[in-house]
Amino acid sequence: MIAGAAAGRWGPSVGIGRDEFNVEPTGRPFGHFDAVRKVFARSGHEPLVAIENISFDLHSGKLVSLLGPSGCGKTTFLRIAAGLIAATSGIVQINGIDVSEPQPDFGVVFQQPNLMPWRSVLKNVLFPVEIRREGGEEAVARAIELLSLVGLSGFERVYPAELSGGMQQRVALCRALVHQPKLLLMDEPFGALDELTRMEMQDLLLNIRAKTKATVMLVTHSISEAIYLSDTVAVFSKRPATLVDCIEVGLPYPRKPETRYTPAFTAFEHRAGCALGITR
Amino acid sequence: MSGARMQRSIFPLLGVVVLLCLWQGYTALSGISQIVLPSPYDIGLVSIEQFHLLLQATWPTLVETVLGFALALLIGVPLAVSVANSRLLNLGLYPILVATQSIPKVAIAPIILVWFGLGIESKLALAFLVAFFPVVVDTATGLKATPPGLLELAHSLRASPLQIFMKVQMPAALPFVFAGAKVAITLAVIGAVIGEFVGSVAGLGNLVLSANAQLEGPLAWAALLWLSVLGILLFSAIALAERLLMPWQGTGRH
Ligand SMILES: Nc1ncnc2c1ncn2[C@@H]1O[C@H](COP(=O)(O)OP(=O)(O)O)[C@@H](O)[C@H]1O
Ligand SMILES: [Mg+2]
Image (cartoon, each protein chain N blue to C red):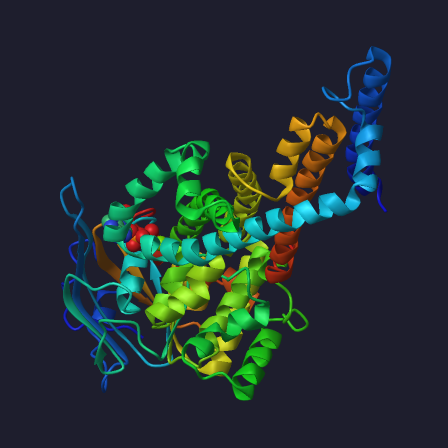
């Protein structure tokens, strides 16, 4: 669930579902973004405003998608939330902490699998616990369990080069989860995959989230992916990014592939399309 | 053995056999002097007859080469690490590195000899000098070519600079280090021989010179043959170490 602190912050293009922005969160939200702005200084050019003004709350245990056109600043926003880069101004608060550096209880899945070719699948998954010097049998057991959860049992000792793109991204997902993060940040994790693998991975992600109860923030430029996965879809405008709509997807979990063909699903897709300005 | 693999092992062999046959035929038919161009048969014969002498000459050259190469790794890799991690060191050192490298080694060999004498040290120094550059350049290139995605991953996990270096940058640079080492080991042989040519009392280079001076064509050629075998063996040793240390290489699906 996302709720803005104040209406009107999302600019003139907000047309639909405006009243949902005004729902005040009860209690303290897990994540709180207020007037986040990011300007990139560029040598020889004028500064580039990537994010103009983004505010929303992120509630514990929810899956929130950031949906927007290519180059609008989604990755930038995710990297700010992950503590990888700093916002130029605004408040970025997660789990009660002002995020200015990566947090130990975050897990990140990048657009590319970013696996280390010199490590076996299991060793890749164990990389985070190794960095935190928390290795040991318990971590290994957890890694093996995660790998079986994503259907990669028996591949523990294989090197990444032998895996398909989809399998590599599943390893990356396990790696992001092995230290049991509270917040899972994903940047177009399935963007490089073919349609069928992609849909498989979406169901896998929903399964894993149901098991781990992690809060998830996921970047995508696919409308149907955003609707299918999310509790809430935050729709970003073209660069510089502003929040043009926050769609509360009320469809119950567990979602099934059939859900994609229901009128309610299509209506949400339509609404996202309107917010993106690609349909009316 | 599959057809492709048969081809891969048979054709190089075939090439060598054809060359040797042509060579043998030419020397037999033209009646050319042994001193100018001995036949492969003569060279082979001397290699067996003078086996002991050749073996004795191989040892110093091998030691010079391996020690010079080891020194190049020992100094080259840490230097590459500092150059790759510090912009200032990079700016300050790279021009000097390139400058030393553009001096022809044959030209400084006499000076090195004056400094280090006729013994093994001067050859070792020359082997080091030629082997050093590819090690530094390739290692530094490898360290800088660490995929940014892996660095960002390490950063997101709050890895320390030492962890990033040991667990990400160094393994990522390893293929480059080996590429440099393979070039370096063959160059080190050349460096050692240059040293022996300029002034020495032992070694295969020394043998080539003395055999030539005594008009023993086949022996000079046999020494050359041993030199190239030495180079191939050393190169293969590095290639083997590469396969053992990087078992993930060549496991790809393509
Ligand atoms: N480090 C950077 N320096 C300068 N410009 C950047 C940097 N990172 C991203 N940008 C720019 O910010 C804009 C948003 O990028 P990004 O967040 O990657 O978009 P998205 O993920 O939505 O496709 C793009 O125009 C991109 O060129
Ligand atoms: Mg992006």
